[in-house]
Image (cartoon, rainbow over all chains, first blue to last red; front, side, top):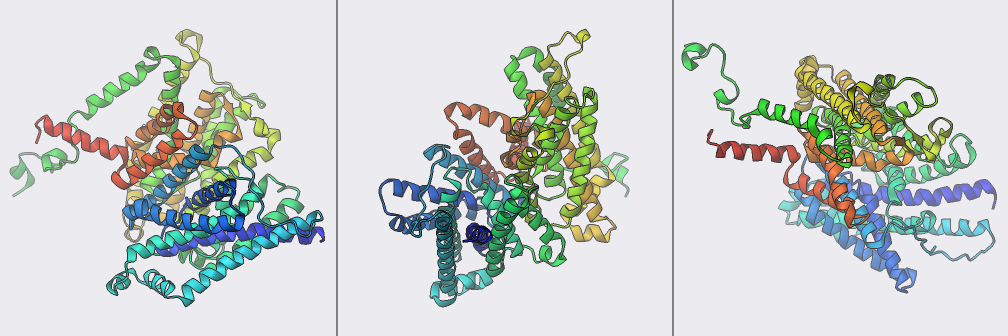
Length: 289
Length: 340
């Protein structure tokens, strides 16, 4: 595999993780009109759950569904216990509450699992086992898993009764309530789904970044950038943006000497600022609630 | 019937006379005077560690005064004020160290630089609404430590730089930390007075109008973009000044002091203190300094756990922040004292 191609594939796999977390952000925003700054930390918590299961001797592909179930339940719990109390509050209230959640979850993970850095097993086998081909193979695996998640979401929203109910709630909560839908439960389910998608992103990125309570800080910024590109509403643009950011970051870090490994984080900042400033439209199709 | 006949006064009654019971604390001036005397007496009564802690409260208080301008007055959200704090902290580290400038230059210099950076960032930021500004400023906060490390030749990289603080003049007979406390107290007092004056001025009233109803303000001829940019720059200037004070008090700057966590905690402290109240910054700074210090003994993770919980509880239960709770308590005391 040529060097450039390998970089692109690795960028795509990182991008797929960003896209996953960004998709979780979009889900939460579509359902409850909140930009959830704690989304990355919830994903980190899910990753610790997965690590605990693996540590107890469970095989990876059995631990994943259990982790997802725990994450969905956790997301619904957070919505029920915290978010419902501030629903419809001002922007500052909503940002403050998710920021509080961020600090709390981060510290809780540190309390339970300590701040030590742990390695997380790579779920994809080194099948083609020669050097660079192995990382290429696991990158393709990450891409595949994220694609499956997106397909599952698409089927859920477009081709099931539950998906129809959720779309009804997103489109018009008041009418949905009048039609007998339990809006509160559906909003909780939205948070649960987002937590599940975020959990997938966390589990996939953990082998690359190592597992520690602060691991999702950088990923969250990329995911926010991708979600901003999709104006927090368009899943297709968001996913494409996530993939593009991953490739841009990897290539800039490798081939642009000035950027190097240190300044890679500046890539999403530049993208966010450029997107928000150039076309006036992007900022104005902003959060409507 | 004119006002004088109806009320027995020549001017229209305001405040308590007019039946406004919100301003409930009966002795505002006396309280302020007692507080001022107590604040001046602190370095002579308490041990050096407590003096250090209270100095940090004042430093963060100055930063929160600035952040409250953006959050409480302009109604915008910044998750990136740690960046301005970092700029302000590296100014004395570089200017009085390698460049050899005298100490008094550092404070106005960092104020000026932070104001400029705030203006430069405020120009694009004013076009962003609500949560988008929070996202952009969060990204800025994340980028700060890598940028500091990248330009290690100037900033000392991840090793950081040590900073020499202005030492007490010999005539005063004070220890250095006492002198520094009084210096920070003076700066904080000036900053507080400047914010009060700013809010009472034409610009302050324009800001209030923008926050309450942007469309109406614009119709009345308030230039929203100009005011928002300017207030962002003012706010950055306060954070820059606080950064310089921070560097003096701590005596050391490194990229690890200015991680994204600092910015996040600053916003949280602004919300907990009460973004729309004159007492808010002080209460927020007390929260920011003493909650981690008190919880530190119980383990690494406990301060974060307690802070996060306090933030969520305050947002859910007391949206006006600790200042709002204080106001309610003051009201209860005043009623007990029988002014009702």
